[in-house]
Image (cartoon, rainbow, N blue to C red):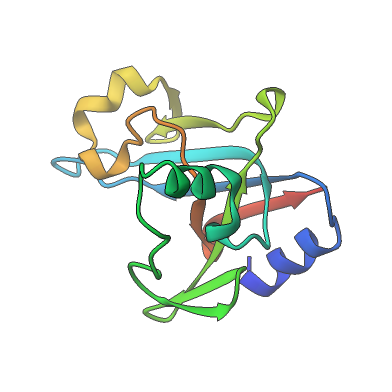
Length: 148
């Protein structure tokens, strides 16, 4: 999908969490199999990272410094779209509701597979480590669908 199409669908669902599905081919050690990670997440968008309640509280409590500029790329349309090396990325924020958690599914060579069965074949950069993320930066080309 194009970043602008994704942003428009999200804007038309103002004040709501939106279900977004994206997939990407993972980097594997040895490169002998094709592993695809598909993520299904309920998200929000159009948020300034520095205005997130957990970020503000962590700064106030001295647990972190102020929000930094983007580590790579530049804002094409703040706070929705980031541009980097001729690619567009959308900034999405996971739902804060426990009943709307994101989940990932994996396939190896087209067959469903559990993460535990392929973990050793993936590079560390492909694994989230299980900690809760503050935001997703998703390559627009990887987005499969946006549903309100």
